[in-house]
Image 1 (cartoon, rainbow, N blue to C red):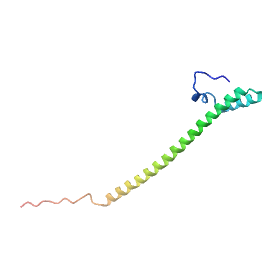
Image 2 (image 1 turned 30 degrees about the vertical axis):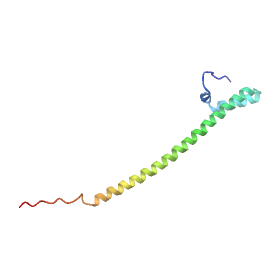
Image 3 (image 1 turned 120 degrees about the horizontal axis):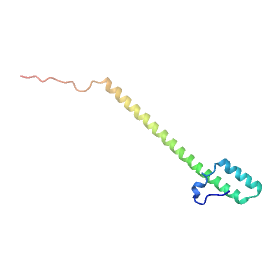
Image 4 (image 1 turned 30 degrees about the horizontal axis):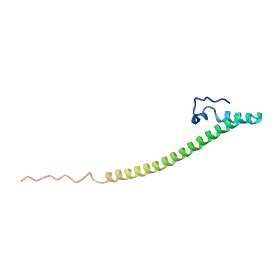
Length: 101
């Protein structure tokens, strides 16, 4: 397996889908090409690490979203209650006419 020397290690796992890397690893082990097998294994591990990190970030985003949705619903309920209370009450002090003498 040849890798482009111009790419850095953070992008190597993006060059091949994990299925392709798994096939290369399997073939390399069967044929005894341990150098290729080692490279494929490192690339798979790197991809797994990135996937795990992405899953953690997704879990954090979902937790944040749930918390914010709860706050939004609470705020909407408060506003709804305030609006319904103001509809029941008069619009403010009644206007009084001044008497001229």
